[in-house]
Length: 286
Image 1 (tube, rainbow, N blue to C red):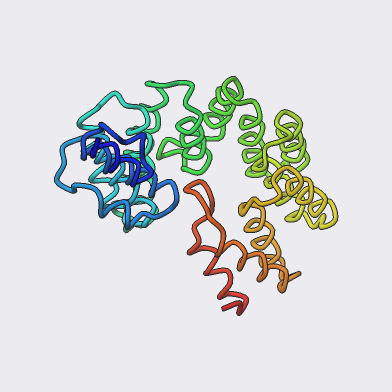
Image 2: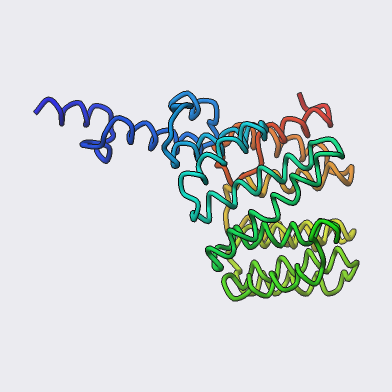
């Protein structure tokens, strides 16, 4: 009887009967999802050989911008489960960030490791939209001597379209912008919205594109459409504020939006609050 009383007192019935190790991992994962990365790390055993534990430790360090530690722990996770596509994809992300932040002598090696990881992840799970998007971005941005290329990126965008049509249009819009084909980019973004009209992310991307093209009224209309879909979405507040600040307009509104963002509950899929704070400081909002 006492065992169940304890479980109810923790308001965590779903954890009852689970080993303490599994409870800690579950709690740490929940903290990670709510951007409490340091708190998540405190619950995890840094000397563990468990792949799932090392995977979470690696992601925590990644989100804290400690990319060396992230790569080390994500490597341990993939060593433990060498055919886990998600683990390998995240390892590629860590290598990619190390390439961005390393000196010019080391960067190409890390970039190549990132590409190999993304390609391996897609090979293991050809329908993983996250891995496909990461590989697309690599091909889009990397020079040819490091394995990048627009033709390769287009092939991956076509592959993404079979898994997530809206995301496929979005990736093709990015490629079109890279080629300075702005009408094509707009067409792709509008098709993405048409395919997924309730996707806040696709609406935000269209609004940002229109704003960056100087079409302020049209941009505001799309932002309002996004607001109707998700009235309390912090992502919309951040995106509008970021655009206003880049264009040096509506700065008071940008400050208010960022202050709301700083006090809102966000998830790992939202922009970091550190970035919102940086923007606030940029416009004298703190």
